[in-house]
Amino acid sequence: MIRVRRSGPLSGTVGVTGAKNSVLKLMAASLLASGRFTIRNVPRIADVRWMGELLERMGATVAHDGDVLTIDVPDTITPEAPYELVERMRASIVVLGPLLGRFGEARVSVPGGDDFGHRPIDMHLKGLEDLGATFTISHGYIEGRADRLRGAGVLLEYPSVGVTENLLMAAVLARGTTVVDNAAREPEIADLAAFLNRMGSGITGAGTSTITVEGVDALHAVEHTVIPDRIEAATYLAAVGMVGGRITVEGARADHMDMLISKLREMGVKLESSPEGLTALAPDRLRSVDVATLPYPGVATDYQPLFMALLAGADGVGIVTENVFGGRFRYIDELVRMGADIRAEGHHAVVRGVGALSGAPVRAPDIRAGAALVVAGLAADGETLIGGAHHVERGYQDLVGNLASLGADVAYA
Ligand code: UD1
Image (cartoon, rainbow, N blue to C red):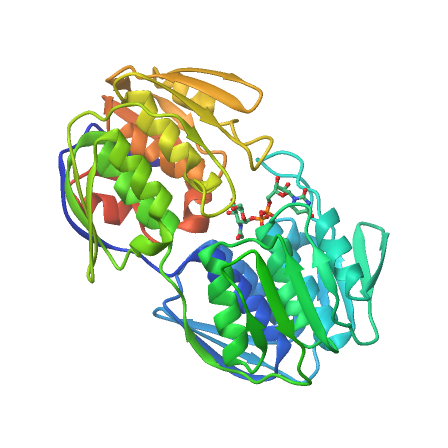
């Protein structure tokens, strides 16, 4: 349980860890070569621990010392991702590409739905089929086979992050050239491509919507430093936006957060980027804006709950449109319990800013909604008690400690 009391203005400097959504894929990519991988700037969070468990189950040895993760990958592994691990973390589906690429076989539990609703994997399978893999699904498992994958043109129906990643990891060891069109452009994709290229692959265009992969025969283990977590950085910026103040988020990369910065500026936050990071100066109360989530470089869906919290307290009316995940509004009722005036219909939510929220016991349904409830609690009268704190710990190494270091009244209860 996380306890938050009305706080602010915030002040001081806070750092961010490496990006969760990048490191999980780099860990999967390590299956593409044997030897010792050293990955730096790795957050100590549950998702990293679980991906480590999955790699260990396959036969790798994983150690996390400070922020350095070492993965020793043997020559042969058991290419299987069991139900109890995939069920905990759907991102494990990204082992499918590397397993098929290197070992020509994979047995991966079908991930179920989650708090964002129905989460299909059709595009993962279709993209890998374009490279020559075949799949059968039985007893809750996807069984994939491929002799050696062959390069092909793959046109994605939607620029899915996970599908783009799975395809890159499958294509690097395929025979010939793969061109992925309508690829996702998130900074984490470019980080994965940098990691794979360091391993010896030939990827160009990562970060744009057309990515070309020249297949190679073998890859080797490498060292790599993960890019900073833009969602964690956004969380601290939202916190100062909620209650005002002046903070610096050390290590935040403005070039990965252009749209967020532009939206926060529209709301009245002054933001300056320097080699050190991002400095934000926020007034007591922000102005409302409309926000619509989209694939990168649009407003990230992972920022959406943070914007909802900001708009709940802001001056005016804002419309939030969620275009990426069907069921990502489920936490709204928790904000309403805190006095927010939000009406959701389909994938639109109308948020009328109420100024002061009111502290209440609430429940975090997922990582980012949990963080948004903590942020909302900073501007709420009395005490907000957030249950389901383990969700928050999946994605943040020390959200509570970091917010407290900025002067927020937040602690574990
Ligand atoms: C990743 C991030 C997640 C982020 C999301 C969008 C990780 C671990 N997670 O998730 O935090 O919110 O990107 O930026 O990196 N879809 C299909 N069929 C498929 C695959 C996806 O219909 O086969 C749909 C999804 O249901 C969703 C949309 O595509 O509606 C986008 O999902 P995707 O980009 O794949 O997100 P993830 O990679 O799962």
